[in-house]
Image 1 (spheres, one colour):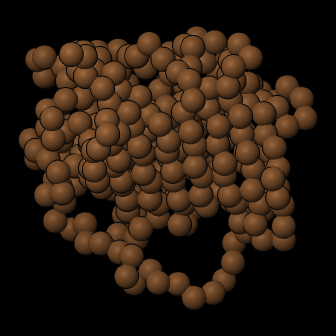
Image 2 (cartoon, rainbow, N blue to C red):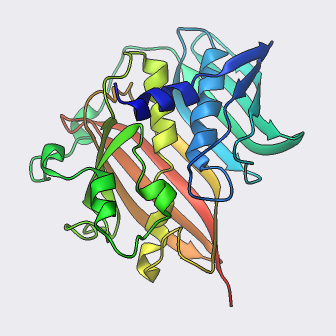
Length: 289
C-alpha cells in the first residue's frame, strides 16, 4: 500500500465523538484556499455509513457545498436518521467548522435484493481504450507541462487514487468525442476489501475533475487566474458495489453552462464494461472583469 493510499484511508476514517457525531481531519495539500469538495463527500459518506446498520449499503447521495472549508481544521459531522425501514434507510449529514455549516448531505441506503436487472443495456465496450498500464501516472504527465494547468500543490503530489488520463487537454489523447475528461482510476496500492471504504473512496475521487469539464469549452481550469469557481452541489448513484482495487473507467462530459452555472456528468465502468456508478456536479463560475 502506498503512503498516499494510507493517508487517504486515514482521511476517510473518522473519530467517533459521541452518539451520531464524528470528527474528520481537515484538508491539506488541496492547492486551494478552501477545502477540496471530495474531502467533504468522502468523509460525510463515511460518517453516514458508519452510523448505519451493517446490512445497508449506499446507493445514492446528494450533497450541497454551502461554505468553503477551513484547511487544517477538524470537521464535525452530525448524522441524523430521517427514515429507516426494512429495505431502505435515509440519512442526513451536516458538516461544520467553527459552528458554521460548510456542507450538507442526504444519502440513501438499501439492502441487497434479488430480482430483474438490465445489465445487458448498461454496458460499454472498453476494448478500444488505451489500457491504464500503457498510460503514464497523472503526476508524471503534469510534471512535463509548462505552465501547469492546475496548482502545483495538487498536480504534482502523489494521490491515494491512481489516475491514468485517457482524454484531457493535457493528455496526448486530447478531449473525448463528447468534449470531456476520461480516465482510469484505481486505489494507489491494495486497499482493504471493505465495500463501505471503497464507496467513500469513490465519493472522494468523484470530485477530482468533474467540474473541469464545464471549463474546457473556455480553455480554463479551476486553477486559472481571475476565475471564481466553486462547487454548488454533487450527486452520486452506486448501481452496484465497487472494488477500487481494480481499474475502473470514468467517462465525463460537460452538459451545459448557463447563468454562470455549469453542469457536468460522469459514468463509472467496471473492467468488464458494466456501469457501476454515475455522478453529476453543478458549479458556479465567474470571471473577474
